[in-house]
Length: 345
Ligand SMILES: Nc1nc2c(c(=O)[nH]1)N[C@H]1C(S)=C(S)[C@@H](COP(=O)(O)O)O[C@H]1N2
Ligand SMILES: [Mo]
Image 1 (cartoon, rainbow, N blue to C red):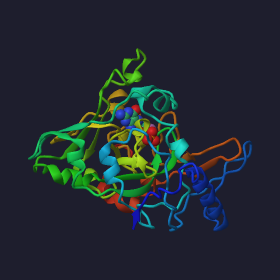
Image 2: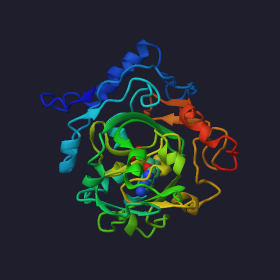
Image 3: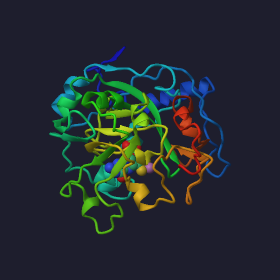
C-alpha cells in the first residue's frame, strides 16, 4: 500500500495531534495503552505492548524547504507493515514533540535549540563522500544516492540515553541497500559516519561552550549496519526531515541509544578497524561504542531500566520499563551472542 498525500485535506485539518488523540482513544478502548498516574501519584510501570494494529497514515505539517527530489520520491512511500518490528502498536509521539524536543548539539545544547536555531541551515544541494574499503568511492549528489531506492515508512521507538523515549514514524530506506550500492571490499568490517560542519548556520559549532569535537562521528559494525532494522531516514511523519531532525539524511538504529543515530550525514567511510565515535571519545566510561539499549547496565546519571515516554504533561506521565535492545531483541540479540554486554556497553 502506498501513502498518498491527500491534497484535498489541509494538514491543519488533520493534525498529527488529532490523529494521535484519536489513536490514544482507540488504544484506551482496547486497553493497550498504558497511561501513567497524574502528577504527584506514583508513575504507572508497565511494558508497552504491541497491539498489532495499523497506524493511521501520519501527516506532518509540511516542511517549506523540501528539495525537488523529495517531491518526486515522496509521491509513493510504502506504508509500514502492520506488525513488529516495523510498527510498534504504541501511540505515536506527536509531530510537535518530535520536532521541538531534540538533541543536535551543532545547533546548541538545549532541547529547544535545534528547532529554533536551525533556520539558516541548508540541506539542499547536498553531497555525501563515500570512502575507504569500497569499490566505488567518490563524492555523490544525494539525489544520485537516493535514485535506486524506494522510500518506506517505519514506526520505531527511539530511546535516548537520557531516559526519555518517543515513537516516531520515519521515512527512509534500509542502510543495507545503500551499502550494497557502493560495494564494500572484504576488508570493510565497520562503517563510520560524519555530520556536516557548517559554522555559519550552526551556532553550536561557533559556541565557546561546545563540548563536542566536531564533526560529530558515529559508527557501526558491518553486521549491525546491514541489519534490516537499520534505516537511512530522509523524512518523518510523511514529510521531508526538518533540519532539527537531521536533514537531509540521518541514521536510525532503533535498538541503540539515540546518540548512535547520527544526523545530517556528509561522509560514510568503510574501514577495517573500529572507528572513534563522538560520545565514546568524550566519556568512554559513560558511552560505549555499542550503546545497545540495556536496562541492566546503568549510566552514572540515568537509570536505564525505566524511561519517560513523550509526550509528557503535568497530568499525564508515562513511565514505562525499558526493554533489552529497546524491544528489538528478536531481530538483533543474536549479533551479540557470547559478548559480555556489561563490558561491551
Ligand atoms: N550530528 C548529531 N547527531 C545526533 C546528535 C547530535 O547532537 N549531533 N544527537 C543524538 C542524540 S543524543 C539523539 S537522542 C538523537 C535525537 O534525534 P531526534 O532529535 O531526531 O529525536 O539524535 C542523535 N544524533
Ligand atoms: Mo540521546
